[in-house]
Amino acid sequence: MNEHPQQQARLFLPVLLIALALVVWFGFQASQLNQERSQLANLRINQETTYQNAQKMRAQLDSLAAGTQKLASAGNRNAQTVVGALQQRGITINAEAKPAAQ
Image 1 (cartoon, rainbow, N blue to C red):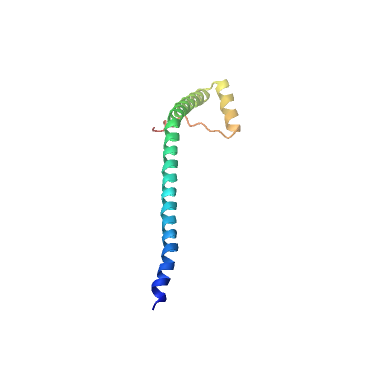
Image 2: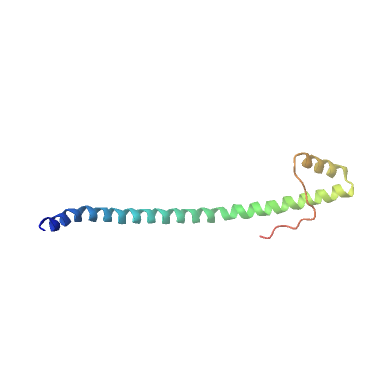
């Protein structure tokens, strides 16, 4: 019976150290994840202007391509040449497509 309390006393310190290490580790991981989340949010905010500009350019390009397709359908030889070259490269133009909602 004397060994039981003494054995518990020997196990208390290692168990306490392991528990403390786990708490510190989980706290560190939570801190790192929070910091990375903040950095990702800042990156997204910084890229928003570039994304909006890319969307505008895409809409302009789609409009230009649709206009070229309409000219080609109306018989304009230069427009037909451009549309033909695009089709050879695997690019199709849908003149009837509506711009994507933003």
